[in-house]
Image 1: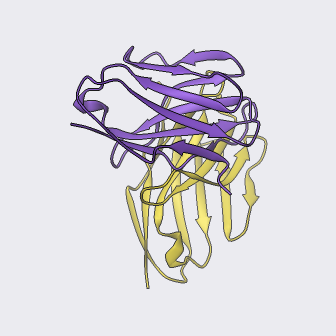
Image 2: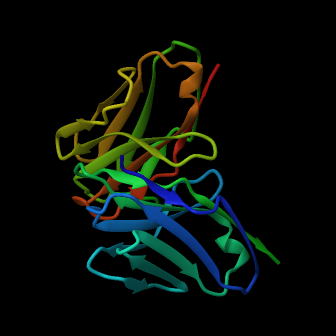
Length: 112
Length: 111
């Protein structure tokens, strides 16, 4: 079946260090992926997206890498700040129209 | 300014008592979604409206219904809430199959 999952449930980094959050997906037909950030008690917030015709996309302090060969994508956060502490979800398109499948989430904790 | 607005933020209902959660959007997006999110889990899609077309996920219980009277509003009706329906309910919108923007959610408690 379709699945989008994350390798680690928790990640703890020192303030100022770079963070890397990984995600694997199973559906080779997935063509669109999104990273969301969810702070406690809030809805998911869009961070960055990438389509399958790209292998890298950069935003402000964030980079998403997509490796279609091994069905893996990652979110890199540069110079991680305390405000980056949240749960990060990757999501990919499923087989049906409008169906985004979410991974389990990685909780990022930033130590001052 | 909030673009996807969910009301109320917190809702308490009794076991078996129907409850309605509401979502409105100012983005004029044609797609609206309802997700259920339980503690420490990922959001799970219940259903979505693509324009006026209702799309139900295969494993969404019949207890959950939705209405979309116009482009801006979408409602989630839970006909007979059970204890297992206590969760955060998230509304999201998108323009076609592009980025989904989420509201802040409604946390439902069932007593």
